[in-house]
Length: 230
Image 1 (cartoon, helix red, strand yellow):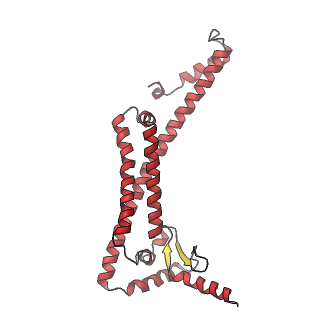
Image 2 (cartoon, rainbow, N blue to C red; image 1 turned 90 degrees about the vertical axis):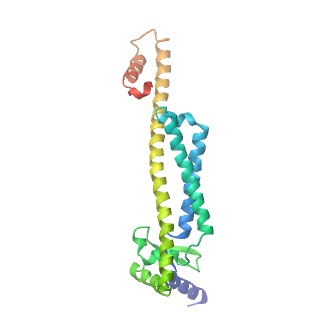
Image 3 (cartoon, rainbow, N blue to C red; image 1 turned 45 degrees about the vertical axis):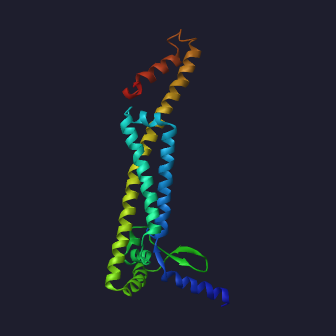
């Protein structure tokens, strides 16, 4: 075995000494907060440049449209504030290990270990219980007071992050529905325009009402939902 192979083997063993929960570690939390912040800013910009789309989607209710837009603005500001708090307030050094030790990997994407040779994170293939025990050993070196204080702070960060993520998921779901609804209306308008132009052309300005294209246009108009006439 040469020196490179030895270094690789030692790095492989070291992965299990510093595990993290894939979707619940400090770096992933910060990254997701910035992503949510960016998505909210994009939505706010979209509505600022095309306010009528949102108002129409809200059946003309300007107050409801404004409130919906402000929900994204508030969430964006709170994500930015939490990012600042994570950089300025005390976050325990054991944060990543804490959630490994309590088995959070089962609900947040499994466990990863950092390979110092590859300079990257890799999934851990060993039994979760063994990796959790390795993290527990580190926590057991803390005094009871230190452990309770760290646990309290870890759960505060977790609670704030999950609350922001849940709010974003709810707002995104509502936004997707509105976008789909608006897309459906636009498609319907384009279809009517296309059929209208064909009917106008084939019937010579609607002089021949029995024309196939005119009948097709009449059928579409008869089957429009009531809200399309608002």
